[in-house]
Image 1: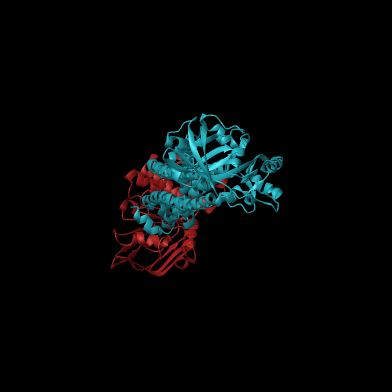
Image 2: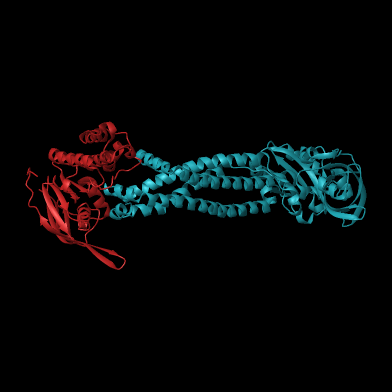
Length: 234
Length: 406
């Protein structure tokens, strides 16, 4: 089943009088259950592509379809609904709310979803256990290591059981052991839950976890490692 | 909702000093407004009470043709057999005191100096004279059969260097248009702490005033005090006759009523100025919070928080600031009002040259209505102050917000 479909998408940023083409006509199809890496040098368009798939931004032209719905036609609130229910995000920086505990950070999407208290409690503890942080539930981000913060972010991304999780350089700010732990957590959750992961990286140690590699350069896909096959080995 | 306020409280706690000073600004603003409102209300209330006690009473019964401004002594403009009329009125249940008074204009002369006087003939036994009797600073109060004695106010005594026992010449315009002059002995000097009135008011027994002004057995008015001023209209209805006019304290103090209405209008402008300044502080605090938390706003938007909920977050913060500020304001304002209502502000003889019954001290009086209105106004203005920062946050594009924080 196709989770995301990008058709001839362009994205041009205008800063002052200077126009920068971040994407120059990209087409890509992401199937359910994929564990796909978007690779390429800085400025190649990886983050822009993730933002368009994640309904955080709108393409200049082209069409983005998520879970069968053309998101380029959605208004601001509908895109927010799409992000809340269908897509999870993991950012390069440890994107947790600093005033909330690990528990409360994971709970936030469920609160926005209108889930009941008992349902939320069960789901949050289940997710924190799945990323190995149940005992750190009451800690705030500044009391957690970088790796732990990123694992909380993974738990939060999974909270509303989205079909697609987008991760932008998820290990960029982590040391090797923590980066490895984060990637192993993502891999395990992909295999256990079947949720689709698409992550941008240029770290070779991270790329090795991907089962599909899409390479971008100067706003174009220059290499696509091939169609995704469920259960294929790295 | 609880989570929203929990987050708001923690967000305010990130920069406790800034949040405290923002709430303090609101608190000081509210405290000042409470004090101003209490001082104005206290002054208006005090002036009205003074005017009622010393000048108008709660009600006055006068002859239909009597014109207060002319202080007419023509018999047809006066009340005949005033003692009998007053006794009938005093028998009414809501009436505390009803007493005849005769007003005449005259001049007080001491040596080469003269000054205008309002001569008031009073029934010396009436409890309506309490402000003068209780306000005696020297000498003694008048007796009904005293044919030579007068009371003068302390400002006049001080101005002329007069003491109890001294003699002054008093000239009066009589009912037939002549001027009569007699020496009088100052029996006592009083102070009602209303310099503007005390300086010109000379009291003498009613019988002597009637004789001196050739008014026969007549009085200018029946001065009535009620047990409860709210009963004024009911008593007016009971007293209506074709022979007399009955005036309420509001009709007789229309200048004061108009001044109060005018002061109310000015107060609204002052409220808005003070609250606008306070609101600026709140706006500034919240705008700084928006810019400091741009990336977090982006994160919340990324995980699906809609604009209206982001706005609600900032409204929650401003409402918590409002609660804190109002608490500070009520404590500060309460202390200031308690001080101003017990000790008061001494204004001396500021009231001498006014026609209003201004006392020498202003005592604050905070009405529950003013307290509730100002508190609610402070809360609403603080919430409104959050509107712009909240809109600023809600309208951020998630991608821009995420980028902005990096």
